[in-house]
Length: 106
View (cartoon, rainbow, N blue to C red):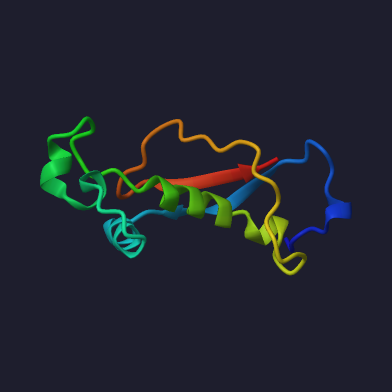
């Protein structure tokens, strides 16, 4: 499905975006390093083992970026040069290497 113009959107319309995106260790480490985020929970396996989850946690900005960009094909591809408004972003559970992220837009 191609992106939508503003006039084509309806209040309450929901898009469940497919396919999802499986996160790799490389995704997390590269993103964390490229964005200058030295948080050991993302890049240091030994430090992460001692923390709450016992393993590296995927950088939340990477998680948000993937969730948002999954929406491009159905919301903005070819129809706009900006993003729609973000009213609410939730991180209900941690994301770890090997998890697949899915998103939906309302």
